[in-house]
Image (cartoon, rainbow over all chains, first blue to last red; front, side):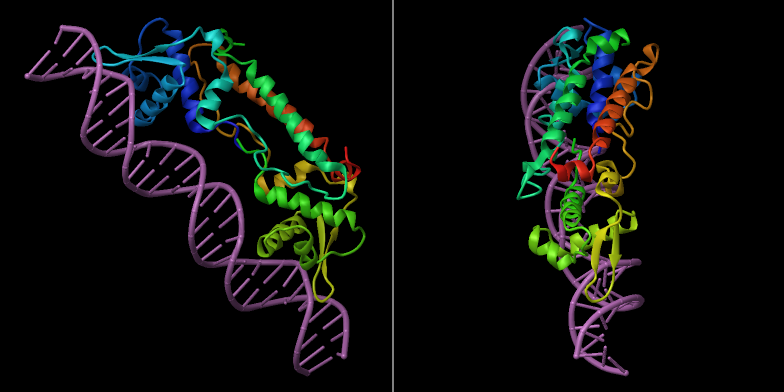
Length: 134
Length: 134
DNA sequence: AAATAATGATACCATACTGGTATCATTTGT
DNA sequence: ACAAATGATACCAGTATGGTATCATTATTT
């Protein structure tokens, strides 16, 4: 029943740090020193954030990462979907209707509505709101 | 990001069927015929529902399972927790504060509040409400 | 009493997912 | 040329998921 796996968690921590140092370019070395995340794992995570357009990377000496967009434009859901795929709480739940004869799976509808609720709430969280502390 | 794993799903289908046949005793054989779930897996699931007090089992010839409580008193969250443990969306998310210097992890608070929301919604779903179709 | 039909308890197992590690290639600054 | 950085990618161990298999126990029927 886990909403947030480790890589998403790490991604948020890292991107927060990078956002606060804006517009500086932050290297993996610095991130590893500041927030305690295994280096190779963090590298992979940052590469994902880069390929998903949330970070911009600079190769070569003095390189690293910086935020690609304004913090207000980075949604928590973006980060989650980058690592966890499209937002779906009930992937295969009640695909077939639960009571074949009647009430065409009211449960699925309920779960769907909960999913939309959760999405809406998560969508209200941006990197900007986190940095501001509310 | 899966809210409902397979065994919970199966459990709901099975208990729905049993509830509709109340107060009859339903055997695994009948359940397997009606709802397509692998027999040994279903047996394990029913044993759990039994030990968690949602079903009552009868051994021996002509035995099987029947609902232990009124459908209105069987909450979806009961079934979920029987298979998935205590309801927690953010198990280890942001245990350490995300921005060490400030704003003591507003994210954790947000996630917690979402968790309470989801729980409240799921709590409003009972076997009775499913049988009634809303 | 014996046979049979049901669940109880429990051990096992294959596969996928999670949380990483390791390695080599490429790019850039000095 | 060299060093310092990321890009791409393959690998890997541990755990969780979704089951299977087996034997013990209980109850009904004959």
